[in-house]
Image (cartoon, rainbow, N blue to C red; front, side, top):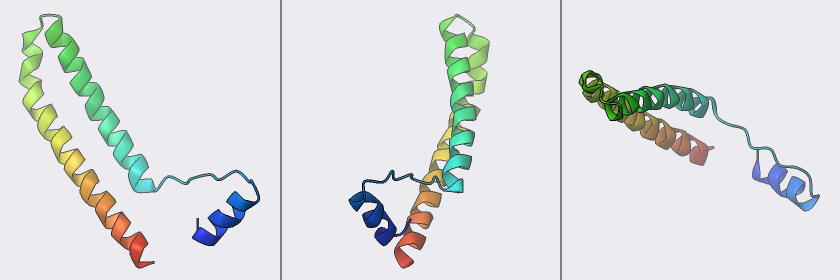
Length: 84
C-alpha cells in the first residue's frame, strides 16, 4: 500500500488491511514446523524420554539456520522497499 493510499484511507476512516509478504508466510510455516519439533522433544525429555535428546542438537541447528535466513530475507526485503 502506498503512503498516499494509506493516508487517504486513514483520513476517511476506512479499514486499513496490511498485506503479508509471501516471504513472511513461508518463513512462518518453516519456523512453526521447527518450533513444533522442538516442543515435542522438550515434552518428551520432561517426561523422562531422554532418547529424544539426540534429536535436540540437529533441531536447534535447523532452527538457528531458519532464523538466520529469515533475518537476512527480511533485511533484503526492507532494502528493496526503501529503494522503491
